[in-house]
Amino acid sequence: MEKLKDWDQFEIGSVLFPFKKGVDGAMELYKCERTYSGDSSFTDSVAHWRVEKPVHNSEICINCFNCWVFCPDAAILTSNDKLAGVDYVHCKGCGVCVDVCPTNPKSLLMFNDHKDNDEALREWPQKQPKKTEA
Image 1 (cartoon, rainbow, N blue to C red):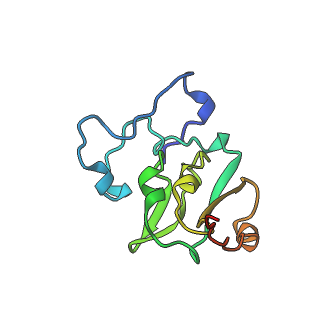
Image 2: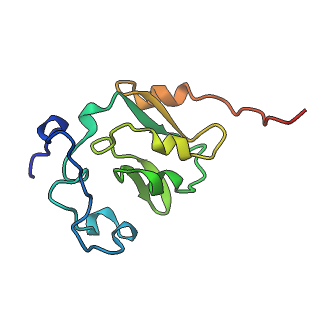
Image 3: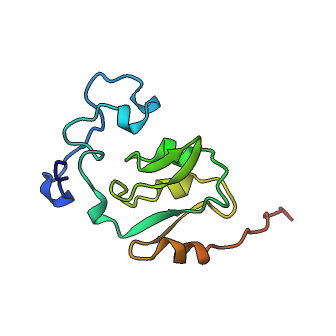
């Protein structure tokens, strides 16, 4: 397998386009069926700059796929029409997935990159009561 480039091997200001030019409907295909460009966040890891990582709690997740749609690096994993976790090789820790998660509490939360996922799940916050106008 070809070695992935590290983030510091790209030129300053590089833009990584995920797909080869002219690939229509690529997002509807499974990752293994897509045609990626030579330098994309799928073929080259940007995870080395991550400080925090999203952790997925399947017990809370409603499988709305907002995180999958909005993830700029296609790092949200799915299996059998359900969210299956995060691809930490390609996740850069931007937190977009957490921002778009609609559940209470959120089913994706950011934790220190070095924290064990099982430990993070044990620290998950409880549901917050709805705010009502007085």
